[in-house]
Length: 150
Image (cartoon, rainbow, N blue to C red; front, side, top):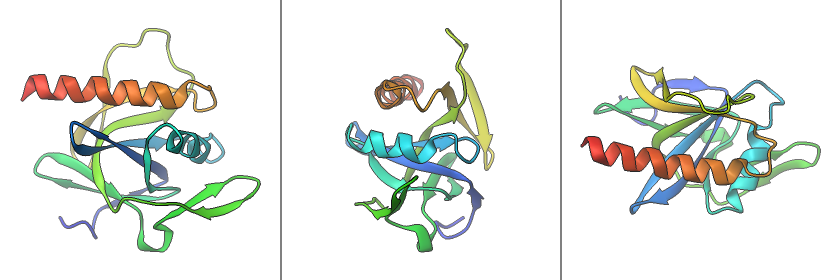
């Protein structure tokens, strides 16, 4: 499948460079859960925006990739204010799924399947001040775990 074809999800996608490559976090949750707010705060923590509100996802060689639909590229909703234009990367591999929810205290490792690709999954409260730091830590943790399995 090419980058232009795939499944579209109501979600956000942010990425950071880990080991020299862009590694993405797909932020899922219902409307109003705080996905865009978390993405906005994560930008201040070294993440870059890939997509807000809708994400086009596709598999390639057993990995999951995502990008913004053309009409939303570079746009981020700041609820209660406006939609703003921010620097955006065109696409990235989705290395982690972050679901907006009340997390368990010490959860067992989980994954979710999108486009037939199993991807590590965490649950977190997007409104916690520590949520962007938790995403950074989880992304690094799962990247190290992936390297050990290769």
